[in-house]
Every structure is written in C-alpha cells, then in structure tokens.
Image 1: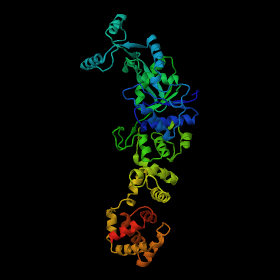
Image 2 (image 1 turned 135 degrees about the vertical axis):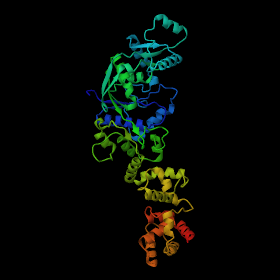
Image 3 (image 1 turned 90 degrees about the vertical axis):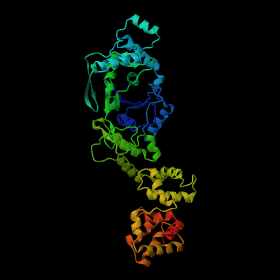
Image 4 (image 1 turned 180 degrees about the vertical axis):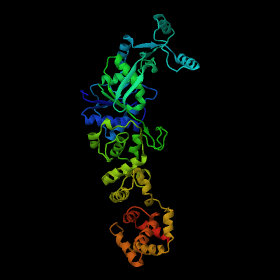
Length: 484
C-alpha cells in the first residue's frame, strides 16, 4: 500500500458499543498506530427509525474508556467531514446523479405491494426470489404515468449479468461472487436517503479509506460495493472480513445471550480494567504467535498484524476474561482498585458517601484484603459481605469444623484474649493468637480454622489477621459469645 493507511470504524448510533464493534475498532486502531496511519470514526445514522441521539456519545465514550484515540470524528473534525451521514446527503446526491446519468442506476416505481406480489408469483413458479428488474427499461410515458399517480421512486443499481466479482481479502484470501445471484438493489429510498451499501462506498472513497475492516456478516455486501466503485470510477479499497464471535457454547452470539456481557459500558460499570478488556478483545481471532497472552496496548501495537487473524470464529470465554482481569487487578496500584470498588460498596449501602480518615484506612484495608481474589470491582460487595452483615452465615465445611471437640476450648481462650486486648490492630492480633496456642496447646489448623470458621463462617479465606482487624474487636467478641 503506497498511500498512508486510513481505516475507519463506522457504527450506527443505535446504542452502546458492542463487543463485536469494539473488536473492529481495536483492530483498526492497532493497525493505524503501527503503520503511522489514521483512525477515523464516523457515524452511519441514515436509519432514523433506530437512531438515538445519545448513541454517538455512547459509542465515543466506549472507545474513550478503552483508550482508542481517534484522529478524525464528529467531535474533533478532520479534513474529510462531516462525519455523520445525515450531514452528507448532498454528497450522496451528486454521486447518485452520476450513476443515473451513466445508466448504472435507474428509478424504480415498484411499491411494497408490487414487490410482495412479484415474490409470491416467483414462489408459486418455484423460482428463486429476487427483484426481476421490471423498471430497468421504463419508457418516458410509463415514468410520467407513475409520477402522475404521485409515486416517488427509489433508485436501483443495475447489476451487470454474468460477471464474476473477485477480490483478495486480507483475512479470507481470494473470494468470488457471481453477479447473477445479486439482483438490482436499492441504493436510495424514495425520500432520497441513501441505503447502507451506497453511502458507505461514497464515504470510504471521499474519506480516502484504503483498508476496510469489518465483520464477516458484511462479506455478501462486498460484491455490490465493488460494482458501485467500478461504476463511479473509484479505486476499490482492500477488505478484511473478521470471523464471527461465538459464545461459550460455540453458537452465534445473540443480544439476548446472558452468558456474556456484551456491551463495553457494562464492563466499565462492573469495574473491569480497560487495559484487560483491550487485551482480551485483541485475542478474539488474533494470535500473537507465541504462548504469551498478556500484552500492554503498546505491545499490541508493535505486534498486531492481519496475517495472524484467523478465518475461524473466535469463542468469547467469560472465564478467561475474568481470569485476565483478575491478573490485571492484582498488579494494579491499590489506590486504583480502591477507586473502582468504593462506588460499589456505597451503592450496596455498606459504607457512607463520605469517609473520614479512619474510615478510608479501614476501607483501603478491606479492599486490599480482597484484591487478589476479585475478578472485577463489583465483586467486592459479595467478597466483603461478612464484614457488614450482622448475621453470620456458616457454610457446611465450617459447620463441620465447629463440631470438633477442641473448638470450644480454642474459642473460649481467644474470647478472653480479645476482651483483655488493649490494641486490636493487624500488628497486635498475631500475639493474641500465639497466646491462645500457648494456653490451649492447639496450633495450626486446629487453631486457625476454628477461629476463622467461627468468625467468618468459612474454612478458607484471605489473611486471618487482617480479617479479624476488619471485623473489629466488638464484632469478634459478639460472634464468639454467640457461638459459645
């Protein structure tokens, strides 16, 4: 490619940024940054029935959170704007007129009822459905009659017969389609608003996009678009069609699929780290070539290439994402993890909206205790519930431990130590436990599992000294007294 690389992410502003769109945008971004090119974000908003005004900002916020900075878009402008299709209608009209004048397109006066009748007749004859091209050669008299009826024509592209339309796809290699299976398709509606296939090629040409990365659901659109590029005398960009993303059952993802969190906004709200999400999405169909799976954004930019993008569908594994996010959380500064977790604790009503210095220290210790275990920040609510709920829930394993005959001896001794303790800090608690061991003769599991089971309702858990400090002297004493 002789020209500087220019790629685009072009969503419809109908909702939040979806995982599939995020992958396309990420691959665009990584290639643009690696090759010193431009990453353009524009909006295909011609479907006004589904358009949401907040959808543009929702999409941009998702990209911002992921750290995918763009070079041109609605917010910062650029040399090839506007970057919303509804602001480009005059541009489309110019190219539409060119196709009509050159005979590559024609007005079609067929109503929905006409088309439905045609489909029914084809079905009755056992023929493959598709537009017959009946308006291809209307006479001026026929056109005048339709106009007199008040009919507004759509515009159809005239598909040439007996053509093999082939192209080299950067992911799928050589792809071919027969033109006879396409049929003349609508490129502008009766209100003059262009359809997707027409608007997208005009936009890509005018914005000098020379590589189009998109999902494989757009593969069947490509021959239509190539024909229009040729009819308008425009160079055809390169294409890369990404394979589907499947759910964990290896089925096509549905927006009703609850086994997968599908929108980037949801990851932000749950307290995932954007760098972990970027790392995970990059591996949905792309292989770095080695065993390593953890990459910074800079490392992804240095390594990413379409040569290693697979033709096979990628499987979205929530367990792997959670494992990866946990690995990132473990390495993150505690202060950052605290910032992610505090809103969830506040929403649960566990902590006050404003914390004093002591409260902030306590919450920091609580989150630090669970930092190694949490998969995402919202889990802090469940992981820390034992420190907030008055009633202790004891699981089966802990209940079995508490039935052992040495337990009352250990708990009685520890209660005595707690009640007498002048200090109940993380640093002071080990001495209390050591004294219990000395007084009772019990140590190891018999000592620590008994105390943990009695005070947390669980046999296993994070650091016992920190857990006891977080429970606090009064709550520890009360729980021990209740059990005894």
